[in-house]
Length: 338
Figure 1 (cartoon, rainbow, N blue to C red):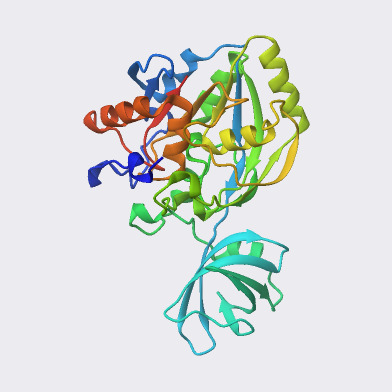
Figure 2 (figure 1 turned 60 degrees about the vertical axis):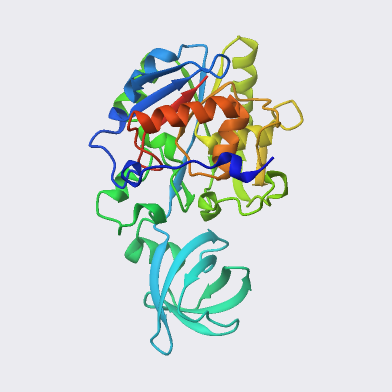
């Protein structure tokens, strides 16, 4: 299977750099994976497509204020994207610099001295030497790490709008974007309708934006991310399936978490890393339907939705979305694939 099969051309003006005024006013493309039938709705119409037998599974990961600035002891400027926190003083980070810092050298993260402990590929392991820990530095100085394709600096409203309304567990460097469409009002409507809800955690890494760079899809090495699928969620899933309801994953992060926990064919509690890679030909054991945004060309995520809905259906749906001037990517519109 060729990576180029998952390429498409998107007019630049359809990349959403800013969110809409209201979360649930974004558009929703409804796609049947069985028939390939496509219909256009508003996101708030989603409430009409679900019933009390269904279970919605959300990712409650919260985006870190992961973009920080600093300098070398020489004064040369540095930019950090915190990837993973090991302890309050030790963390993994990407560093943007004219010349990469050496292992063993000391640098400043904002106003705090740090030692470069190690480097693996483009990721550095740093240890803070001062009194402040990484949580305090992010709280005081951190910026929301907007994706590169937005081509702008973060603004005040991003601190709220680039988080889901139910975000709880700090640890992502990118929002689980399908969840951004859910307003407080819509969450209340879901509750009033007595539709089941459950929360897993997957901390999104920066690898989520990387295009697949090998020619053959199967030889791509997937980045790994930390997930938690608790036992109470597994129980709700078993109950939902037994009652003839659907497990509806909110976002590809929820899909990947649930399919990791269900790889044996039975859903089981799971805590740890996942590097699951779902592409056409792979089987889905848990998820029956999903909400997802529109994904970048040649990304592992467009491969995932192609595996779920069928490649031809996705190509057709993306063409429809482009023709109908849907907004793409993180702050863009969504699909409901059922």
